[in-house]
Image (cartoon, rainbow, N blue to C red):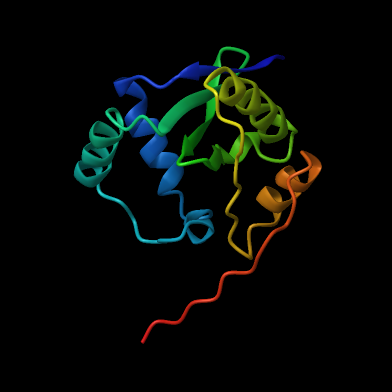
Length: 139
């Protein structure tokens, strides 16, 4: 089956929210809180006018299986549980890079939480260089 990217439509917003709120993967985001539909829809509406935001649905055959986006050069990849660890995320990242070049984007950044082994693997496999540690403390 073939992996491809297609532009996100408003009807996809619930799918994206469900991926983002998946209990198994929330700890892979900077904020692990559940996001409400209202907040998510407001975010997506606001990003539509952001020239530094582009996003796509990852399709595998005829199925929507994930989501990728670029925000201020930062790449995010989310896949449905059933389609993880099958090479789809890797191909999606390659396709995202092709789209980024078409848009004139010359640098991409993968910010990955320490415990997100699968994202680390995808970025390393695609020749992203490890650049820094990020320390923080709630006070």
